[in-house]
Image (cartoon, rainbow, N blue to C red; front, side, top):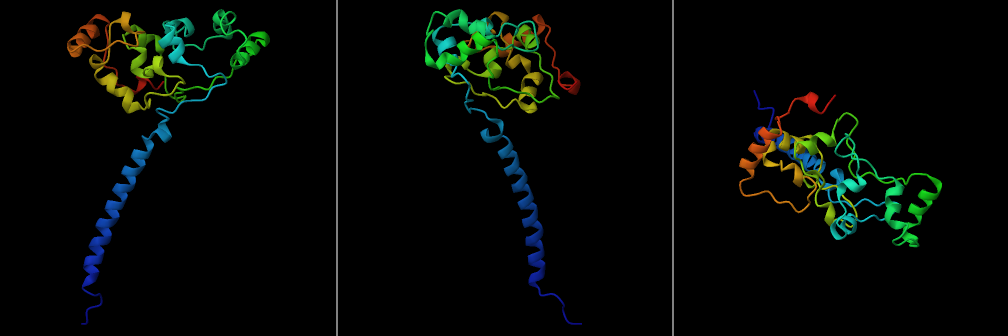
Length: 216
């Protein structure tokens, strides 16, 4: 009986099978890389605001504590957006006639809140409590980055679940003394693991990795 398929068919079949597998792996890898890119995560992308508020100026230059504006961060799940009155505590005296700050003055006159653009916005199926993280010794800078060096605010971390789990699986690598939570200049010591293990015991920190911890 005559051979139906040419001998090269075997080679073409192998190349097609392996080539297809390689293509699928490459496609999945490319999609994973794209999903972690700043285009998707918006890490490092400065967000425009109705008023060009500079954390670098207010925190880095003027030394204003995080809690002066984010008043509920130690007691509530939400850090809090400062009311316009907080801005006017200073700006009724300083740069009181600046055109840049007219939206702030208008908000104060009318009582209508400024529509700030959110920088960190977790999905609705994620539960996050600022107060418990503050109480357990997680610094603002750990999640939000060096906001004291940001002329406009941007997201410093992806906020993906895998990023959160890095800390939840090994909190001893990240926790700091409570009195240093709001200190942007704090640097972990050379014996961070020893310090972290000590603080975990002192603050009763658990390695919480169950789904119900964040998804309720």
